[in-house]
Length: 71
Length: 236
Ligand SMILES: [Zn+2]
Image 1 (cartoon, rainbow over the protein chains, first blue to last red):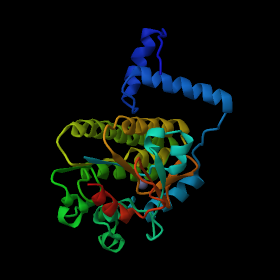
Image 2 (image 1 turned 135 degrees about the vertical axis):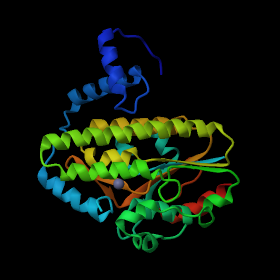
Image 3 (image 1 turned 90 degrees about the horizontal axis):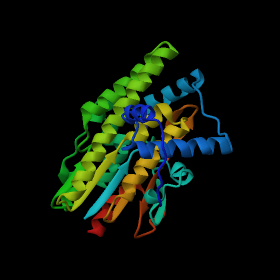
Image 4 (image 1 turned 45 degrees about the horizontal axis):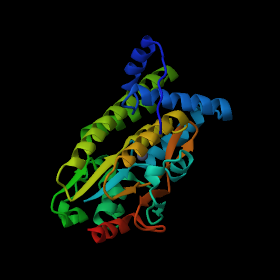
């Protein structure tokens, strides 16, 4: 794959660097590429994200207990 | 040298969906774990390394103590190698402090009364899992350069994060892409193996009743997790 350069505000780079800690990415470049891919895809196919529900929570709690996670 | 990427809860359908070509290698498929009553992590990895169904033995320990299982190398296929390195594998070299802490936070999440509190616990839980993942990844990459005839790296991130975030597609994709990159950096022959996959319950994740495997040398069909001890011995 060939790479090019883009310019983004330094302030944003610092922000992303701080966020890296909470992700599996090693570099700002990789993180930015991922985010852009995701945004483009989202615009293209608008897949809704799941939200929290108490019913799901009860169900998964029971399953996790059966699997030995919640002794 | 033979290497195993042991990835907890790597889900077949997500490997496909996210095009993780390095994880797929040339041949890939699902493992058959239907002989087990439930897809329990400790039972499955113990059965993998001994080459026999360990369900009864592990369950006899009870839900609390089963996580402390430490099998003798003589009871595993690892002793067929001269200088094996097994990183963080449940039932063998599991870093129990870390994983106890994860389960403690998981419990805290369900015990939390408000959504706000749950949100905070989830952040702590995710950070703990990601931090551990980065450490394991670093250790694994270092170990690949050392003089071992067998290396197994166990990656728990997809399971741990998945339990509370499986419905968060972006977060899961991020993890799968990272795991795919680890597979892409491998220079020698390797097997990818998961104990079970994961299925969605809203935002949460439950274990699915099949695992994932891949190799670049042979179509293994629909193997049992206990078949890998023999498969790996024969690769030597
Ligand atoms: Zn799990």
